[in-house]
Amino acid sequence: MPFHSPIPDPKPRGKGPSLVDAIVQAEKMIQVALILPCAAFIGWLAGAWLDSRLHQKWIGLAGIVFGGVSGLVYVVRLALAAAGGGNSSGGNPSEGGSSGTAP
Image 1: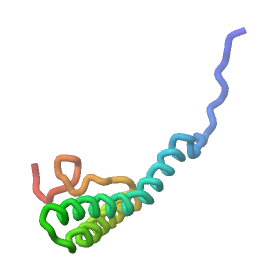
Image 2: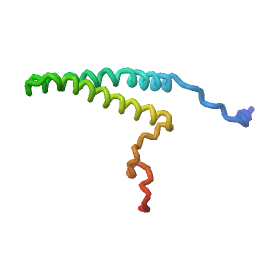
Image 3: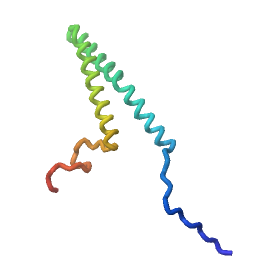
Image 4: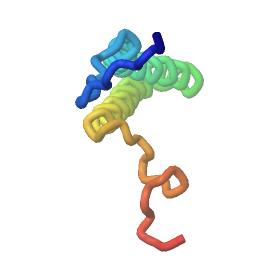
């Protein structure tokens, strides 16, 4: 008796969220949660080092502020890239973005 393949489904099954997708999403959320404190800490370290080298007292605070602002900018860029469908090319024409001119 010959083998007959079954009749294919008219509607292909949608691929549900897999374990790898869930892990990738969790990693993105952890990254967002850790960026701000890490950036502020690194800014504080750099400011404290400059304080000791330049004999000032205010550079440590400026380092914390600069680190916090730079971390916030990075988190906002991550959020916009995630909301925009993951296209984080940054408008670079060599990566597929349009530069407004013909090649």
